[in-house]
Image (tube, rainbow, N blue to C red):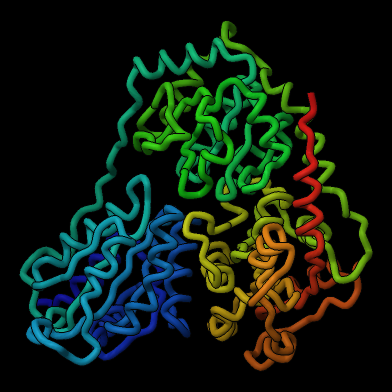
Length: 549
């Protein structure tokens, strides 16, 4: 009879697992030995948090659950942050943690803590594999739930003695496709009637709009109706840059141009909009907006989000049904009201395209990055002030080409996330942007990228401060406190890891540096000094903003 560890790995192969990211320990050596004999590639990371973020970004890019593993105790607790990130960012992920022998769990024991209970609030489902014959069922359930809408993280705890037990059950469950339900026909009629009566409808596309087949159906719906559209941080690229009524990204807590369009709109069509990413309180402060909710699940109960109509079901299927019903009687090109707002947004985005000042302005950096990256290349953003600029001014041509953590919004995701992105898309250019604080949170994964020979280009916006916190402090108090620090020599640090390090020294040499970086055969770290005085200037400008009539 095969051991439970061997059956576990066979079940993972059956799920189509390509990579397991992790750090092994004593309690999962049987599992790791079974992985060694399989076709699954084990990616040794330098910290469990890096492993979790790699699995997180892998899941977002592929729609298949990324897999990460750790040992018990501190190894497992190090996975908690990326599990929570995947949970709130809706990324399919399966975490596997080792555990002590079940015979010592009833008492105080070396490195034993109740990881299952600890992980439960940050996962869709988790369990301890208490006996060998649970393995195949539990693995199938973990993947099924992780990948089901809305996707998220699941967790399996694998005690060391169970891993060594003989298993008498089949080595895997057949993976069968599950069809999601279509929306109710009466709800469709109600939605179509609301749209027909609307003069200025606006679509707010959320995270789920870039999953499955939703993007294609959304773009078809836009081409048929000519509606205005905007997207959340995590849905960048859903509508396409060239769509004339695209108002790009909403998500700043302060008022912005797109907020003027929402004020003017008489119907908001929320397409897989996720309130964990951006509260409706910011765009519907009076709770008076007419709303159509289109999602896999019913709307959350929220004072500022009370839809008149809910289309619950498969998103691509719902949009397909709407596309089938849209006819000449429906209003067309209602998005023309958005043109004046779009012009103001694009003026802001391109304000400093030709700037030569140094340190570089955020807008100029992102203009140069966009010039070098192709439409299908990937930008992975860390969390900090730079994330706000990326969300606001970086134009994404295709869905899932600008990866931002905005549900849990965890610093440290970019560097390991870039590694996963390069493994998924080896033929595309992959760039990460981090602040100087976030980059150091998982800098050790630079060795992983070097060992794997991956040409990820990792840019650091350096200013020696926690830029986003300082931005908020200055807005509220007029000064900053507790946010300043010193940085290492980034070029020397990169070279110590075996990567290449480059420092930007002038305001007009970034494009050449980026092109040179992408021609290299190893990871590159770019130290790019940033002028964050633009943060306060933006806040003041938006504070004085008057919406056009």
